Image (cartoon, rainbow, N blue to C red; front, side, top):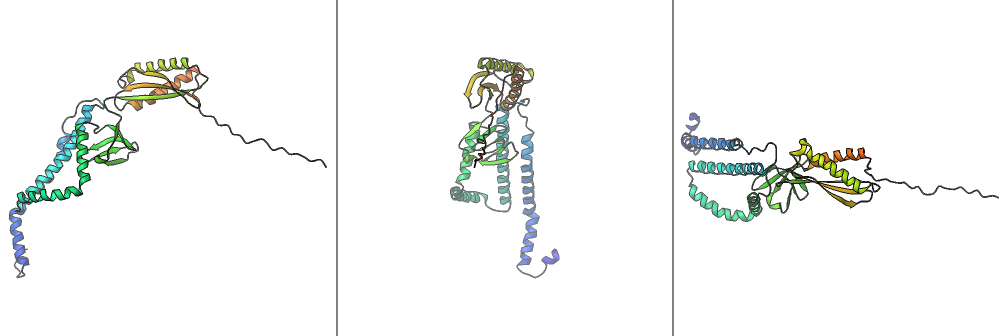
Length: 296
């Protein structure tokens, strides 16, 4: 390399000597800054994940949801801070005036803000979602036509994972209305139809008895919060009398409770000889053709 720099080619020789001088001085320090920035960037999620979360024993509590959400937001904010500080130190090491650069960036930021209004809205909406604890990581929500588990949340976007495993990335500014299925407590609503010929009072007694047995089952008591309510006849449908039963459950347990009660009440109605109707279809082909013979 020294032989190449000794060649009388200008300005290449001068540039080469300047480059060697810079690499021997500021270049090493700049490389160290970049290495430290990259290391800190990689350590941020590892350090945050090592922090203990509230003990929930598998339950979806607000404390656990809040802790996971704050950890996600903190990870994003710390990564941005690490990259920003590392970038400023690297530029300062190059000999640039960082103070003047920041002042210029502030002026340029006003111009950029007009082009990044949606991004600013995302951060503002995300801040209020976090502040009001509307939902968090682990909650099951519905946003518009999309529903799923909140897999990731930061101030810019929300990531939903639906039942089919699809990930949906939704900017926070587009979330105008959200339905949360796991906020503090949940409820299972079970509608079951019986035939019109059945005695309604007897059917209601069977439902109350089976719901009480379900509530007293030790295997399911930790998922239920309140005694079940058999509201009675909810609807007189085309082919069935619909009976509605309510179960107060812990967050995210309403679907498992509803499936189990449907299984139990189906078996119980079969034992009691109560018919669960299903639609019947009668095909009509019209009157049969009659052949009329004409006599000569």
